[in-house]
Each structure stands twice: as C-alpha cells, then as structure tokens.
Length: 146
Image (cartoon, rainbow, N blue to C red; front, side, top):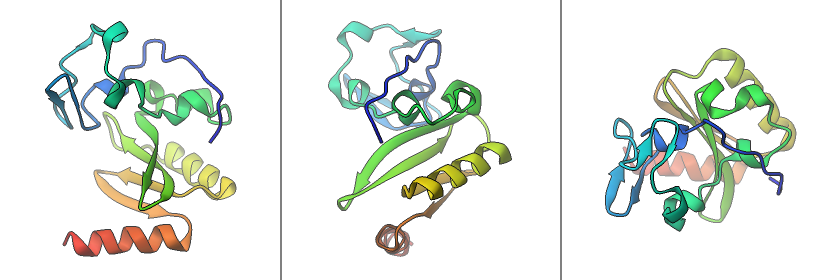
C-alpha cells in the first residue's frame, strides 16, 4: 500500500502461531508459535532471519489509513501483503478468535473503497473479494484443491 511505518510495540501476533513459517529450522504454524517468541518479543530479534521475519509484510505497520484499533493485538486479525500468480492482495488471518463483525465490516469497506484484493478468514473458512482476475484465480485454486 505505502511506505508508512508504525512500531510493533507489544504486539507479537505474527509470532504466536497463526501464520506458517520456518525460523532457523523450527516450524511455526497454527497451533505452534515461533520457537523464539518470548513473552512480548523475540529472543533472537537482532539475529532474526530475513524470511519470514524481517520480510514479513504487516499491513497495519505500513498503512496509516488502517486505524489503531485494527492493530493485530487489538483486532485479533493479522493483515499481510501477499502475491499469487502476479496478483497482489491483502491476507486477513484470524489470530486468536473468530473475526468480529466490526472488524470484518471495516475491512470489507476499506478494501472495496481502495480497490484492494482481499482474502479473509472467518471462523476458519477462507473467502475473497476483489478484481475479476483475483476472484477467478482464487476460485480456480479452490476448485483444484477439492
């Protein structure tokens, strides 16, 4: 979206096991937090790897138009910038609870207004809205994985 940059502060949602990744050979995935996560930080912060740590694209950190209450530690939703098949989109992953109605409402309205492709999780299920190319690609991906 843009180059605005906030600070994580005490937020560690991206390390809590809602996302997938491998950090120095240690897997992280839904239900298994990062091996290097400490109470409200990272035990290897200064030596963390580029992938997935330094290169993680938290949209809340970078997009000033996303309100403070949408910070992952408050909203329980992680917004990350992604790309598939040359199509950019924002991925909204539930992080600790089902997505609340006010979060989903704000997210859908914001992404539609900004004309940003969105893949979002509600009660563990995946949905998407956006350009016809994005929707077609995601529908084909779903159909090929059935």
